[in-house]
Length: 236
Image (cartoon, rainbow, N blue to C red; front, side, top):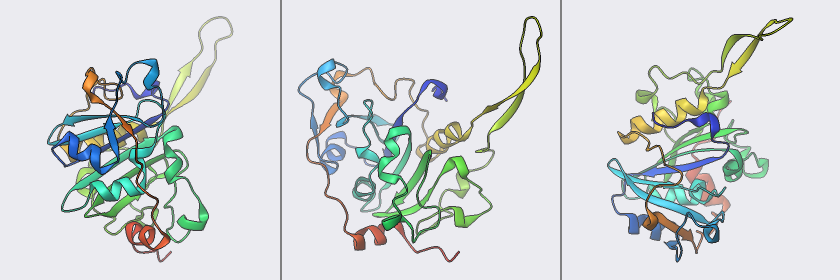
């Protein structure tokens, strides 16, 4: 992995197995930016970068946007035999936040800190909160095929790591510090699914033609469409 996630406060990126940037842009309502997306004029939550990555396309939103994490976008990108895989945390998590009027039927479908979602054929195969992920507990996942990513989970640890620390200087004393590992596990999981390594400049690629703006956001799903996308309710 080439990313230093310790300095990334907000993250929203989606991989899809489509192979054409323009096709992906049209599916999510994006049009090319009239200015370089790295310029102050492009600093907007609707700004997205779309680049070829591995055998597919990678979408990122460098300015605190969350459009590519929406369930509507995941559904559109994963239809007709394609996959859409999304990792989000920070403000990008808004579309997956716990809104009990629509999320409550699916146990642990909402997330509070991080979210991983894997969609196929227009529906969510599996979604879970990596911060509170227990691979041995299927009820902590939602979707139509909650074991879809199991082959990619080997050697991944989502649990926090607690390490001993020592304060230097006069009156030094020992302590403990917790290091979160779920973000790294999530990004590694996406790398395994895509068969590619994240570029170091994933959020702001060094390519002026990578910039798009979401000019026509996809309309929100109806309750029936949302239920069909999310999958079978948990029996817990």
